[in-house]
Image (cartoon, rainbow, N blue to C red; front, side):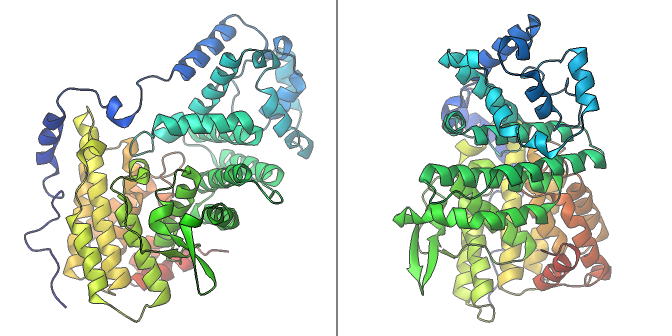
Length: 514
């Protein structure tokens, strides 16, 4: 078996991260990047809505008295949240009078209160606002902006404005989806300040109740209904991971499979039949305009990687990728590596005893040869530019480790594997605590599997433990610390070599899938 492209090649963007920063910035001159990304500096809708709500608040107008819906309904909805209602979304809701506050504290949360959530969320858009389309749209934009303000900080780059506009238009036609956005914003608010266990349990309770009330499968759903349901289930996946754990979120992802397959089946370009099975083109679903379909696929591939399970859907890999894919901007990993990781999943589940050097050699060469597009990394802040480069480079080495250990069956002491472990450790040390560091979650887990030395393991453990509460990627890194501890104290004790299957066994023991 030939040696890989390691000697003298640390992957073109690895060891020289800092040296490239000045070149990147000088190549862009001093123009603002907003035009390149399609993102205006300010959102007119969110400014208008914030100003409108602040003006109303300063005028001390009572929402229940002026806008014509009962204060008891607002009280029922507020009772779903345990934290002080004067915090967080204060511009969207207003301080109740003393009588209402006493009622809120004296009444207990009952099933009857959750049954009115849907109606109350509809009433959150006041009737008087309905007469003014511009004000109504601004109100919806405000709720969306409150939710996105938490999510956007975790994206590799801000999504295009067209995505927010699309979600806004769907919120206007789907009151249930609007409710999910509000639920998400409130969960983020509750977990913002290192919450107590009681707060976590309450958040889990809200999610479970909302799930029981509003995520039943419609009969013969239209494309719009299927799209809304898949979006709702994926929001619950993310919230479950954040509030409970990764396994709880994965169980919701399993529930979303049938809706995902229904959405794919309406577009013949996305699938083909193979031996009676629906086989999905991974390259094509990653380029489709429907964000919820791309999102399901990405969750599926990443969960299969860290949990050591086959993907939920069956994918094929015959189509070539387009030059630019939106998934890269959200999560930092180039789409080509998503496809390559998916190919290793496919190989492991279909032919684990057959090793084709041409297959893994081409994956390795493609991973080492990939270079970032400068426009996707550009930032006016050098620290942010360095962080983006470091994240993508860490994904390069995480992909290589998975190819070597997951496909080639190399053990963790293999020089190729150890080289990539060292690179990931150095990159994690390079980046200080910033929102974008959550994108190191999976590379840290992968590096932890093969880490030989205590100082490496300590850094991986410390970093993963910080990925909890609202400071998470699409997976909660802290969930995998007990898995790695079990591996390090067992099969990998005293730095012994391990196989990928040893990690999978540790995950099955510590984080079993019910």
